[in-house]
Amino acid sequence: MSHFETPQPISVVLELRVADVRVAAGERADTIVQVRPSDSSRRDDVTAAEHTRVEYADGTLLVKGPRRLREWSPFSDGGSIDVDIELPAGSDLSGRTAAGGFRCSGSLGRCELKSSAGAISLDRATRVKLATAGDIRLERVTGDAELATAAGDVRAGEIDGSAVIKNSNGDTRIGAVGGDLRVKAANGDIHVEHSRGSVSAKTANGHIRVGSIHRGSLVAETATGRIEVGIAGGVAAWLDLHTHYGHVHNGLDATEGPGSADEQVEVRARTGFGDITIRREAERSDELVSGGREGA
Image 1 (cartoon, rainbow, N blue to C red):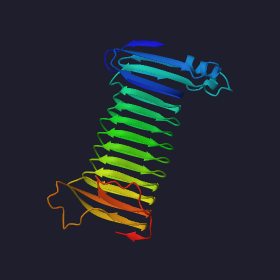
Image 2: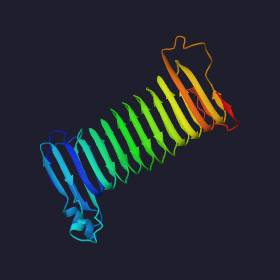
Image 3: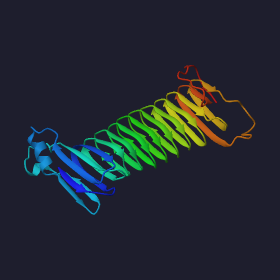
Image 4: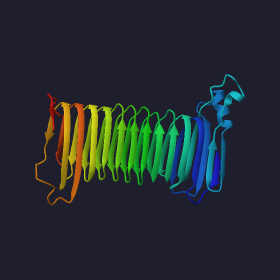
């Protein structure tokens, strides 16, 4: 175990090969680092833990694993380690693993994490950039977010700033976004509960649902799937809707223009196979009826 006096938030740099990382941020004036073999009975894991460097200087903590254990044995698989870090709230985190996940609790500053295979979970951060081939879970970001996964579900509770999300294979669910949002998926549903900025949601195969949008523009495109959009109360909407095989359900009243509405939103929705439903946000349609061909 390594112990350092850190009365202020610090910066953490993690350079690891195969590792599961747990970070706990709290109101404290020190930092504790523990590096353990994932399996104490495996020689490769023990060797990897023994050769992991833990250094602290000038407000920066470095945890760096050995690059290649094959330097000691041609039969080594590289070994796997577990890293536990307890540090002051508000600390910045930058980490990379070839395989393994990150579990972060408490309130962190800027976070940039990348794993070739592993889940990433964060409670709270000021700004994030996360990339993996696994699930991503994020409770709250007070700034901007950039999220990408090659295979896994993305779950984000609140993003106060703007967000860019890429998901090659999995569902994406966002609670609330304060800024503009761009979501691009190859295979999976997209669900956004509340947006106060513009939204671009595109998936090749999956349903798209935006619970409420308050201003800006909305582009929703899917080759196969339903589209459902809720327009916030008091917001005027300009609609451009088209489905090749399905029905268009427009629950808004037609008018000559925006009238006295405080905000306006432009909605462009396209689907190859599926219904399109536009409604006021107070209304909820959980099931859409499939049908023949209709465009609008």
